Length: 317
Image 1 (cartoon, rainbow, N blue to C red):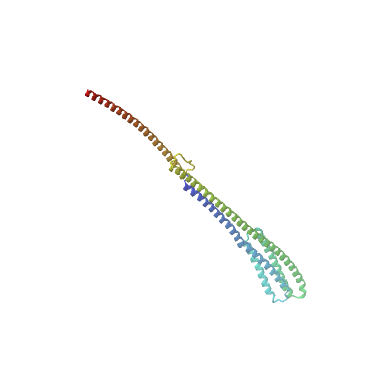
Image 2: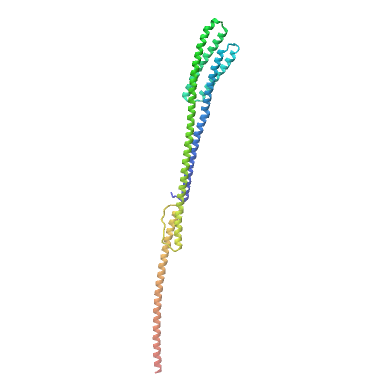
């Protein structure tokens, strides 16, 4: 396939365009990575962190309500406290279920499931305390001693479950923070990588564009300048110069045609010189013949004069 100037120009521009397309694709891909990490943080990590905090608040609220319940000696206030406690329990379970629904980390899921199991035990102990405290307030003094002992046992169990749940929620918060930090690091790494790749591709594209421009300029201007010089020499009558063919494009065809034209002109000039020399030689021969004829004519005229003089002498004698 012959590489014409047009094809070379198109190839150069297509190369730069392809490089820019690659840079665009890489940039889009990296932006998607950053966006994905941002979506992960907003759609999963932040809600999990919020839910974890809500679970902690619900646990603390439930524990405080149980303390308030135990300190209350008014049977009329107990139903309101029980209702608030049930609401705190429901909040804890609701946010725990929310984490299980959106989380994809197995360790995080295991912590939440274990916290919910302990919270169930916490709730059972709280219900036993509520029942015992009611009995404590309603029954006689003789029955209170055993009820009081049972209440203390349940309080101890409740505190133990509450402490374990707090520890688990602390682990959950640490894990969520770590995942958010990892997601942010991935996003930052993707952003840094994207900037570095795009910067590199842009620099390479600029260098390639400059290189292609210089290459095309030299490929076109240098042979054209050589042709201008030889045509200038031809104008001054110098037909001896020829050019080396360095490409197979239009410049190469023009150079080849010039060399052929110069060769034909040299041959034509040589033929004209040969013909001129032959004409000059013929002219010299013709001139020599004319001189000979003129000399012969002169001699004949002299001979005729002599003959005429002789005849005149004869006549006079």
